[in-house]
Image (cartoon, rainbow, N blue to C red; front, side):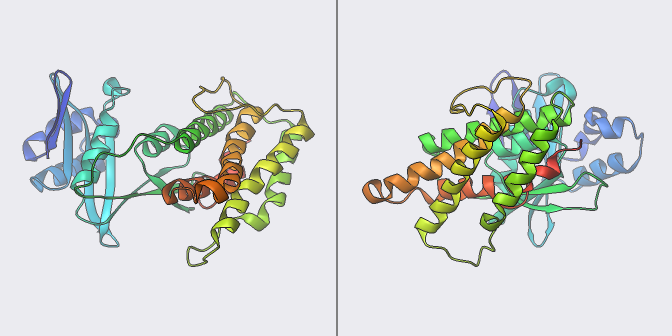
Length: 310
């Protein structure tokens, strides 16, 4: 598959002739000489028009992506690398989209460290969902797996709904607060630590459920909406102001107020869906599942305390 963006770059299948150039733009291979990463790149390229995609501009390769099928017989993005000089131009997103479009299985997975905030933001914006958290691969930095359900021959997705825009903004505010905490721009106070512990205690009964457990729709909406009330109580307890996040860039550095506002926005969407249930019918299944993924399960609000290193 070739994807052309006139005047900028092309995404194409890679081959053996690309190996030297890709080794040259790979930041790990550059510091490793002819080590393990370089050997992997050469192996991927030797497989011909198979696992590797290359983003190429007028000056040469800008990045590459590798898709393999050794993960429980499903597709897996083994590697995504963009040259530092090409970042911020949409190269990573186009490579991920090429990987998804080419995937030969119904599901495509990848993983990244919890600390890799740029990659996690990219995956979210490209439509991937958190699928599981694995500890022990890198000490103190869990690996967060993501899932993309591939769809062949489907039309262009519809314009985002108000609920989807709210959820996207909530993720932006969430990531801003977590990033500023991990970078040391937000140092939690003792009150903020205690409130986070209290939130975990207050929501333990509405946490992750095994997918085999079927709940009535109203119960699912109530589980989401309950977060809104809990967050309003937490904000009043600490004197933080909850503000609308939809379509708004989070202030930086972000802190407790921004984090609580992000989570409250998702809970508030649950309240809206619950009120509209009688008149407008059920919410879109995809939107409902996305709200639940924000609140419950690996890499979600339920894992909130694991994202802080202080």
